[in-house]
Length: 460
View 1 (cartoon, rainbow, N blue to C red):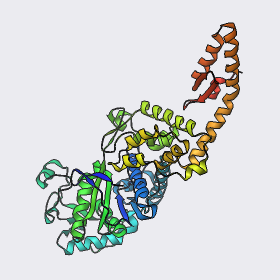
View 2 (cartoon, rainbow, N blue to C red):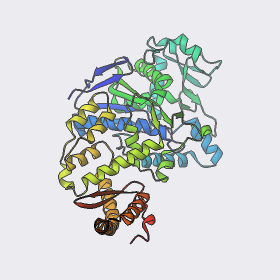
View 3 (cartoon, rainbow, N blue to C red):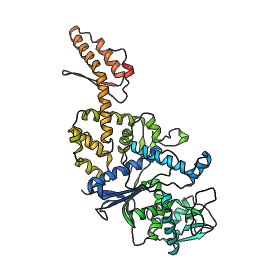
View 4 (spheres, rainbow, N blue to C red):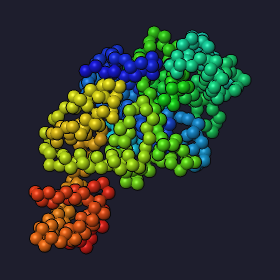
């Protein structure tokens, strides 16, 4: 199957040709672990998890390597430790676990490798020393800085000239910089901050060098795909390219760059000042299922801004409940043997068109095939789907006596021509979040996503 992706580096949609089809390699920038992941943080996770699933389906699960890092040394973490009185290790361990739990709740598989920056300090020090030796970096006042002017390709990824970047960027003005755009590879640490010994004194790495060192160690000097949010395009990804290509000029670093657009809430940028800022855990705790969050995210193409709305979440929950109703009673063991649908694969192969992939679900008639593709798209795990079906069955069992009552009431009304009691029962059921289906074959009551059994008390 031919895969085509829009490469941010070339700004064109290209046919994807892996360096080694037996080892397709992808790196995605992960979180800085100092707090809960907000909803916007979940978008790249879901986007690149979907790509990971597609690559595994096309090349085989054993032939794809996916790396997503954790930044666990950062000034935000240091500040959180200082204000809370907790240790940095306590904060990063807790928030890393929060992140993994929350991303699992929205259907994300764990990547092949999840390196932590603090585990790769020696590799960073070695890369920095190599950049100095090659004339691409310099030490000054306990800092080491990358010399932007030493790399002629700087700005090619983001499409900016150095002069434009200097004019438009908020760059740190420091007397030890030779050029305002030079960026920090290593900085000194005081006794109260995390630090490691280095040829330039006790200190800690800058942000950008982490990903270059970890990707080189785990994926090599050239790999297939580098992903992340488009907020990282400049300066983070631009700086990664510069230092990696200068340290390893024999390689090409990443062949394909993919960037997802940002998230809005009800048409506005998410911010605490607007009161529309919330974490993934906030939504989960409010009763929004993880599969609903994922469905809403996948409903918009990754290269377009994604607008989260309560209306979309409600529609997604109703859609997913409908899928559950369709697969109820399906032989799950047989369903597990089903391959991903070819049209869903084709949609994802066309620049990860997740919207078209979701639309295809409505066209699948076989319940087992539908179940398999819901799992393939990460909307449920098999265990999660079976648990959801059991919950659906339990609610259906609770409604069965009411279905019998409504059927008998309707039969009586057909004789008396008085349908007032039928209407009363229907109104009460609808108010409790139940879909009422009446036909010549009988009465079917389907619990919806807002089903509230307490509202049905006293009807029997």
